[in-house]
Image (tube, rainbow, N blue to C red; front, side):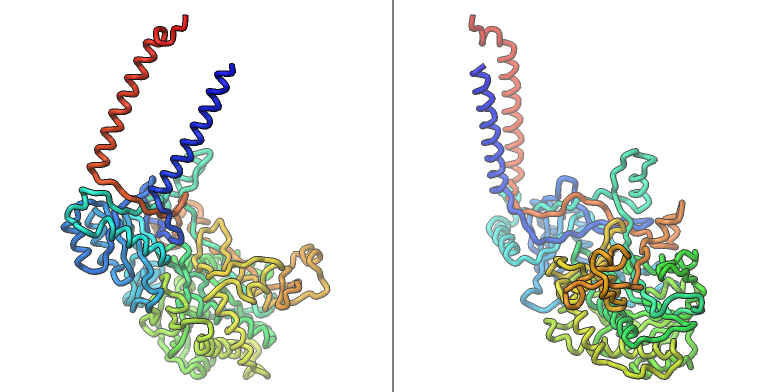
Length: 639
């Protein structure tokens, strides 16, 4: 018995030592690379888009591409593939990526940020030249986004990662120069530096297929392979929605942006400028205390607009179905919508009013054009949320206020470079002219809306400085860091906000989006009615909002701002035809882990030798075990 216990202890010690040794060997073989972002897979009703690695991870020999010669070498002279390409923005375009795809010799692409110590590339937009090409009220007949490459809308057979870490990039380059760069025609004869990318996506084919695979009719305890994209829309009425309200002017803006890489969705020019201007317009109109009678104004921030107008199509669907009750429980119908004004991409420079179905002598339109010194573009249909309204009612008067005419001026639309620097600014301190441009639009629109609903010539005491100060506080929250005074004030006391830029991506419907929550709470705080007599407990009992407040001491808010679902009707309608193209059908694949690490990949000859040696050792071991087992009575006879 004592011998048996000693044997067990020895076995445990041997196992522990083996485990530690194996981990040490693994640490010597692999170098994890942190701070990377992965391209992931999405689907619509007919196709799949994006990237995925193999299930065990995709390994490729590092090949740094800096010019056309490096691409040609990969296509014609490479001998040790498959390769993982390391390149910067100057070589990252559709043509080059297609060549990698057609070579069948690429196992991954790593895009590195060469812009840290230099300027952004002249342009980079992975979206379509006609964003939401097939989901508007009319087919797109001209390239609104001339910088669009459609990289987002391609199914790539290899994983793609993005890295900004200069130290990690230096290590990759050093490893490449030491093992790979010399004597390239004989690469196959030696060990080479390689990268392993793990970004396996569980879903495939299209939304219909991956959702069907997840249904209970096939599996009583199903795995989820993909999730519908969607979140929440945010709404706020200027006045109470009662029976006296006969018509409504809707003021809308998009709340989301898009990008190729997970979590890197800044959306500065494509989304934030319009979003901040709408918030400022709504809050200023609340400050002016407009009295609403038979005409009301509803402000709406719409989510998922970058992916076939998810939020606006759901809003119009709910209005049409007489199922929209996000305004204090009062029903709002589609035929009550008098007109729609959208705040699109905004910024420095001239303004444009893209209009449909407005009379040339309309007073509000004429005043906006005059006061904003804007150019009027009649029957102009840019890719914007008003498309969902026009799709349902082609005679509805709509305006899109934007900083572009027939082509976007934003050279980084729906990309990871659509950030503060992409707007042309180096820091928050240099945002003065952007603040003035946005506040001019917000103040002018708010005062014009005030005149429309009150029937007066304008507010008795306009305060443009209020709007400028408000926008100056709003912009850093969306362009620099969520750890800002306004978001802190709109959060419950003691909330720890991340000191980083929040992604503007809509994400999947089953999880709340932080930027949506913070924006909704902020609108509630600045348009709601404080209840100073109520403490935290009493506030909660009355189902009101308890927030830190502007002085961080805690305040109870009775808010009329509210949310509604921003999930496509395609996932609500029973037996909806996913291939019909009527509604957005976007889903996002589920994944287990995303990561990348560097390793030294042995030569093919070494791998063959290891396989042969392993086979020989295994065979000898089997023979030895068989021999010992068959002779056990002789070998271990102690009698």
